[in-house]
Amino acid sequence: MNKDFREGLLQIDLGAIGDNYIQLRDRLATGSRCGAVVKADAYGLGMAEVAPALQRRGCRDFFVATQDEGEALRQLLGDDVRIVVLTGVRPGFELDCAGAGLIPTLFTLEQLREWVALCSRAGIAGPCALKVDSGMTRLGMTPEEFDQLLADPALLRSADIRLLLSHLACADEPDHPQNALQLRNFQEAAGRLRQRCPDVELSLANSSGICLGGEYHFDVVRPGSALYGVNPVPGGANPMRAVVELRLPVLQKRRLGTGRSVGYGATQQAAAGSWLATARGGYADGILRAQGGRGCGWACGRRLPMVGRVSMDSAVYDIGALSEVERDGLESIELLNREITVDEMAGYAGTIGYEILTSLGHRYGRRYLGS
Image (tube, rainbow, N blue to C red; front, side, top):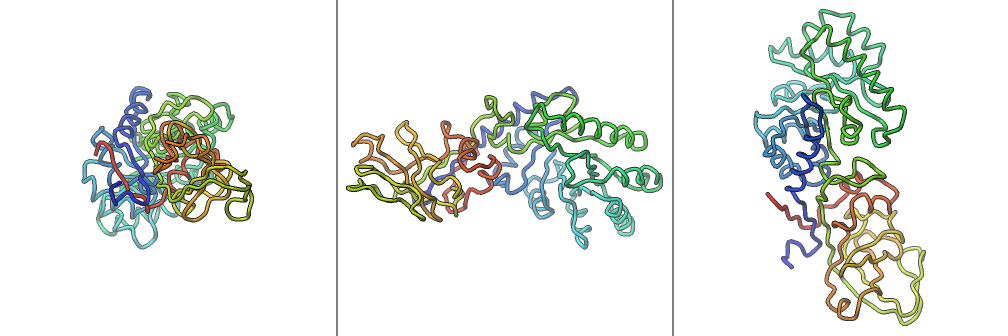
């Protein structure tokens, strides 16, 4: 194996990400555009590689979490794209944000007033996005503040509001009544704002929100996790292509002469005669500790149960199902592939695919396909 991959190989298929983007775009109602969320280093997969691949597929609306991410993305993609910063702009850094051509998302009436006043004093353009709380109770202008904004025509005239946003809390549960409630609340807010700002665009749907149907799509949708292979319809067949493969080198193989406990805490016993392999990759590398005794690896076309707790740098797998020839030749174990999906691994850890992707460590060598 190339020395760049001696601590493990994380393979990321940029072609699959592009295909997932096209598939999501093709689901949209007429008149809707497909953006892309590339925050948190494109969910841990590398914004510097992922974002240009999406740009090549026609994406022109990008969403990041922080101003630092936005500034890096502007340097990467140039002026041909719109970049929205989902957590706004920190006080004191407004001119940097505007200078980079970023669109901050503002959540309060005070933020909007301060942004408009600062941009006016500096004599610079100050486009912004406005977020309303349609029912998630996380970030967004409250109904009371929104009423105050609509009652201030001078502020509305001076504010260059390009986009009205909100976020769905339960989009991955299609039958949850919260979806319809938030849709109604957002439609009402959008209708009132457009009476005063007719050109403002609207955005509500994330990955799972796209799958709720065309009435949720509005002008721009914001898929993130589905681009990277996470199932946007939990409980159903995953329509997305797998994006990541993770392969760990085997450090040691052994056959137990007597029954013994395995790993920290002696939480699991392996019987006499068991064949075990220890692979290099632990919770410091995104193999979450909660998977211990529940997760699995893959080799020679078979699932290999994880045994005992995950350590910081390694985990142990039962390779008893392999033949002698297969065991002798075993050099690596796969943790993610077309058989063991991000969602399956997340299930072993009692979490979601988002956490798996964003936890994958930086000690692995990385290989990008289709770059």
